[in-house]
Image 1 (cartoon, rainbow, N blue to C red):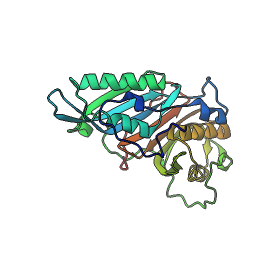
Image 2: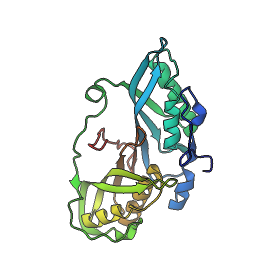
Image 3: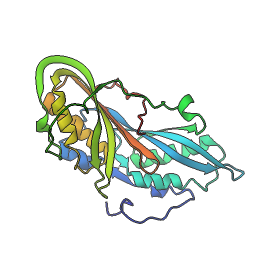
Image 4: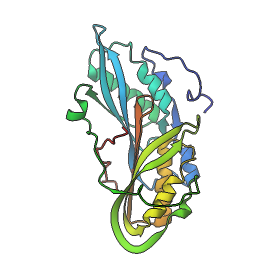
Amino acid sequence: MNQNPLGHQTEYVSQYAPHLLFPIARAESRKHLGLDSNLPFFGVDIWTGYELSWLNQSGKPIVAVAEFTVPCESEFIIESKSFKLYLNSFNQTRFANVEEVRATIANDLSRAAHADVNVTIFPAHNADAEHLAAIAQPSAFLLDDLDVEIDVYHPAPELLVIGEEAVEETLVSHLLKTNCPVTGQPDWASLFVRYKGKRISRESMLRYLISFREHQDFHEHCVERIFCDIRRSCKPESLSVYARYTRRGGLDINPFRSTEASEKPASIRLVRQ
């Protein structure tokens, strides 16, 4: 982590520089959750890059929006500041066409993550209407209007309470806040919990999610902690946890974890994204 560019003054390189990517081993965080290579979930980390630009062969700038999908079984995550610096290195680099850009990024990310990373590049003009998901309201029960008293601001799975009624429902809260483990800067997210099993007290779920307010960890690791805590404390038949984090440095990170291999993250973009 001493080599991590996060928290240090860095030079912005505008010529292609794949060495800027800084991978971080997932295993370091997962061992604290009691996880090994036999993961209890499936999933992906979906990144959206809103500030991608390069030069065509005539030296004319091209701008686009990109989506990067990293499988959760990859050995490494990519530290977000290093990802931003890497994408900035395309700014004054000439490429023959968009496919060359896409293939270059996919190859570099796959090498850094030690897994196949999928990259899709959309034109900036009308990208939302024609390609990316439009901003929408989530279809789920909103927890945030519940009247609860809060006095715990570090992860507390003991707050979770279940009843006897069997349900299948999706809950959402926009109150999730975690903090960067290097700089301490706040990270904001909307979190979806979809489960089938004994009803989880909605008030207890809200208290639990707010208990992450002073927790320091990377986005991906926070979502895995939430997944593991709910799975161990509430023992649902099925469970999916999906966080849509707000962007920083032109990037947003949206980790999704599920007990079901067939379950896929919804193609949504929220108002804060």
